[in-house]
Length: 171
Image (cartoon, rainbow, N blue to C red; front, side, top):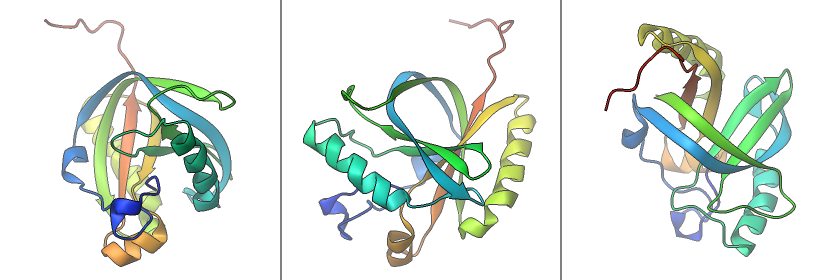
């Protein structure tokens, strides 16, 4: 789900362009996020729009928005998800997290009821790249209301891969 934006045409989520996220290998070094926990069911965070609205007010008030909204969900446990909202600077009073690592991405489009199948497919994709999955994040690119308006419901999967300490970096 994207950060709320008056320029979106819906007054809520920006229209999402999936191309830059399709089948990519992304490396982050200390990418800054606010982290908080929400309830979830069947891989979908509950009350996310309400919580994001509150967090977005704080982010905008302190001037910590990012050029491209990015909100990740990680299923910590059954019925619990961690939400990571990308910010441009630290925010006093919020739990801050820096994510580092290599991530493989894949974009899916369709109903969120397909999440279970997409997770299986993403795990196979990671294996096909001869990598080992460390953690799987979901980027819900729009809220359900905006997905209906735009006619597309994209979910980006970001698979953090385990770093192999034996691999040598070539320069």
